Image (cartoon, rainbow, N blue to C red; front, top):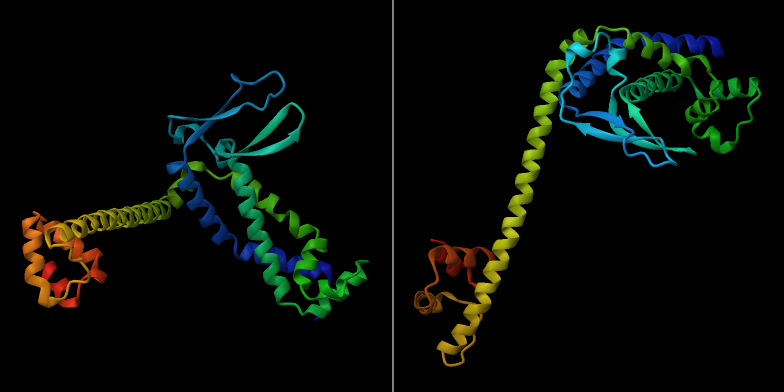
Length: 282
């Protein structure tokens, strides 16, 4: 088969259309997630200094409402909460809207389709096409020819497909899109919530262990001093089973609670023989 820029462009368009429903479902889920769980922002100019009129992004105590959005394009005007430098005099920041977020998602989808199609064409053919269209290809560029082809934008038309798709998405009924993506968005939120909860519990467990270790070490340090005073200068070294009864009596004398003994066994194991460790934990 003789490949041309036009025939490859047509393959890319076909691949985009074949996979469009996958993208559509993904966008519906993401839209539902943003609508249900993202905070709402406004831009206020109440605090603008004389030299900067970019405004300030403020999160407001208000949820998104279906009544406010007839089509997806309406929701795309809302702010995501992200900002970026404008590099313009008198306007320090631009504030991203959901349109920019979803445009990027669609662009990545189209780029993925381009890469899939190019991956099915041998490198020699792609190099020949670049040379035919006046591009010089270095040896280093030949080693990653797909990246080279996309960098040179050999296929101009496919790189603009994402605008066509974005326009199609904008016209969709917003409520129907939310209904389509709601279930998956809820599952995703619940999964995220559980992961956050588990991460918090792990952090709390680590902090609790560290705190208990510190308490156990302080208690052991105190017991070492008391042991030396009460045992005629004898050092409290590693407790063996033959010394267990004496050690327990010492703990009783100094009113060391059962909980504290268990903590000593748990965290000061290097100071206790295995048998003493087991007995102290009972």
